Length: 133
Figure 1 (cartoon, rainbow, N blue to C red):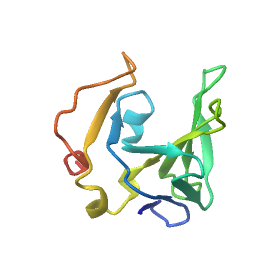
Figure 2 (cartoon, one colour):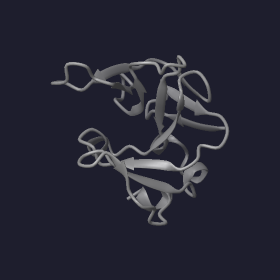
Figure 3 (cartoon, rainbow, N blue to C red):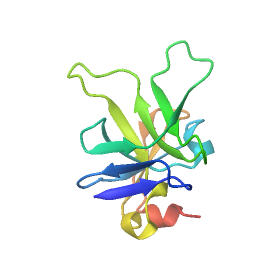
Figure 4 (tube, rainbow, N blue to C red):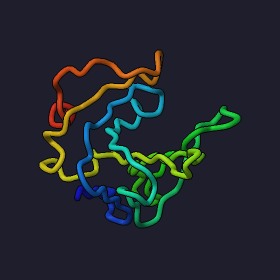
């Protein structure tokens, strides 16, 4: 199980099982937050605990997700979809930058072009450890 916690320790997440590859996205939010995402569904393999506030993208009539952050230290914990799928499941992703570095260092990175094409980019062999700085 992976765990991540905000800087002040008030909020955290857990992810059970293999997190798979981690996504680095260049959309207008992700590049500003510097987040690296591991995905699943709300209350399945990912669970959040502690206080969070939410931000939805301004200027969108019907935003599709919200960013969850600690109200005390402002660390970005996760994003959560605002609409469930037909099967009733809601997507969520946690920010693996909040995990202890040695637990996520070797996870492969996938790049997603959320700014222009909204497509996955070819793997370049990088892993989380390459993205710390």
